[in-house]
Image 1 (cartoon, rainbow, N blue to C red):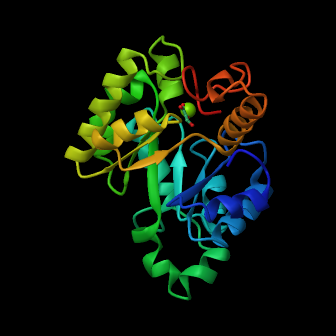
Image 2 (cartoon, protein in one colour):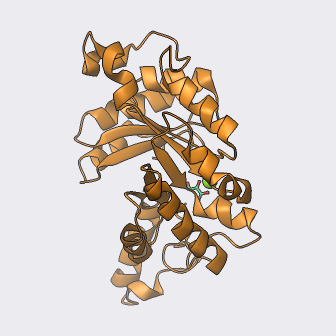
Length: 251
Ligand code: 3PY
Ligand code: MG
């Protein structure tokens, strides 16, 4: 979710996705709205996840208290950052999350605190050359459930253009990252707006794919319909509007 519409969040939760992620890094809203979006996702079957803006324990704690079942944390480049991220998501003694679960109590019940650490998903974004270099140490951090690759920032960090098709160096780094995550018993996730490429990533071991965001899906559908109504065929959808397909970054 990059837009601030709880209605759209509710609709997406009913679309068949396993999870809907409320994006506080690049979404066009702040924490107050993120809480409403999480409530709206909870009105459907999808699991509510949130991407925080950075390793920020206060923000991460609030998102968890607001009912996020998991956090995707951007730009985790070192094992130290990964450990700080996990600490923010776990209660003492393993972490430093402050008690006050609010909405968590509604869905988790009175014994929420007994199970939260086992059920909250922690995914550290690997999206830089540093993260790749430190991947084994990051994957060794106790309590980290997995990694989530951001191919656009990874491309920029490797001196490439973001978007699909992936630059060769980005594609091979993504294969290596999935293999390393799976070998260490952790989850491998990735952002990937191109469905064919996403399928390929699943075959390469990725278990969680964010297939673009709400705006990129809407923009693509709108442009294709306009082209069809004008008798131009979907392939003619304006390339300055539709960046899904060749060149897509998923935003
Ligand atoms: C990236 O591709 O860098 C992302 O963070 C995707 O959201
Ligand atoms: Mg990124």
